[in-house]
Length: 321
Image (cartoon, rainbow, N blue to C red; front, top):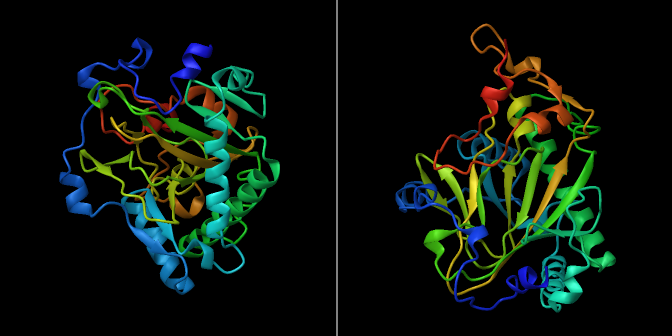
């Protein structure tokens, strides 16, 4: 265990452990064509008038399933100050600089534990409760504000996403990607879609997030003091495919350590999610069947270890019969 955790420290290892190697045909490298065509992800200034922000978020959800939220400190009643971001990053860095032996006590495969280091890459919540708690409350508030703006654009009641669909739990994942001796042979995270409602990512200054777009990968260039927001599969189901939950992955590099903080708004397992009637009609039949979130997670494989650019295998698992 200590040997594995030592690989997480920001040092240049001479080789990649076999467990992290992927076949060459499973790593479709970004060519840059999609990024050039799309100019990376949409960047939405959250301080603009509400009507403009609502329209921009809806357009981003239909086209990319992602956007970058800037001016996040200026959102009325739901701002996230820059100091909160820096404090959170400092806490994360402090944890990963701990000796491997000290970190080993947090390792667990038990998903019921609130604090755990797992898969050699992520740590859910940290010991600095005040910093982490404040960050989590503010980011959740911003996520719920984004969902309220979506409701207005979609013709849903303002509190549509209040309740079991957003109050199962909040998961905070801190992902650490050390430099790789050969970035062409491995990924920080393989292609996947988020199975929850919405994700708010503090990406860090080092690029690494890549988003599927038109048969290629957009290399996301982080905007300082901004979040990357992506729509989860539950939003795709509710809107019957109008909003997209898009495949994304984390690439590695050979020189810099990257740390990101992902906040997931998670529905309760017993919450039943299906296409809302407003998005279903004769010309647009239901694409997905209603099911509990717990059942959804048991049947839907979120990770794609192949080289396909299909955004999800959701329709195969949930198609109506």
